[in-house]
Image (cartoon, rainbow, N blue to C red; front, side, top):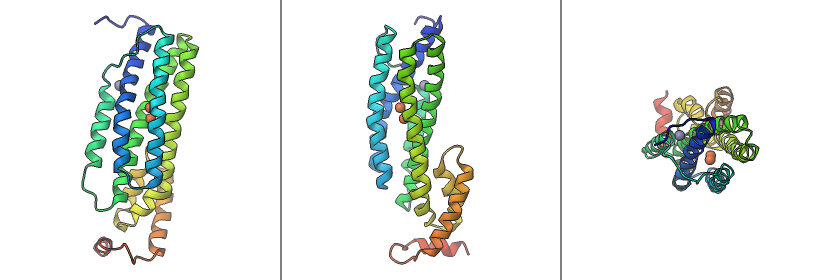
Length: 218
Ligand code: FE
Ligand code: ZN
Ligand code: FE
């Protein structure tokens, strides 16, 4: 294989890596969506699948601008993140909300990795004054950031409140797990809300195995 001998060749290599990552995600996101229970989470994943298909098309356009064939180069990082997500999501969870919290965490790891990859490629495209490529990559970067924010919102507003209901002793772990990187401060506030809401809500109806968790904490 030819060595990477210029910033231009480096950019092409980076785009091939991202192209491979995005294509993997068009297969991985539907799997996550099928395992998700929360409606908001499912529709966020489905919407991001559509966006991901658009991102693949944008990368093809970027290759065209650079006069290169659209071709992927195996992205070991994304392969690993997807594999790890599969593992975590495939564990046994007593409660669907717990699995949803894990799905959010896995999806946010994907988004953060993509955000880093696009950020680097944009900087390199800008150095090369490839403004069309910069614009295409920035559009995708904005979608990744929006997807990440949406997942944080879902984690804080829905999943964690319900997951916290599964057992008070796990509140802290759950709130932090679903909230994503950099959200620890807000997670702590949402944990307090979750606890307040869990104790003000009646436990009849779906409390089945959950009372066991509660009595263990006494
Ligand atoms: Fe993407
Ligand atoms: Zn990669
Ligand atoms: Fe994404």
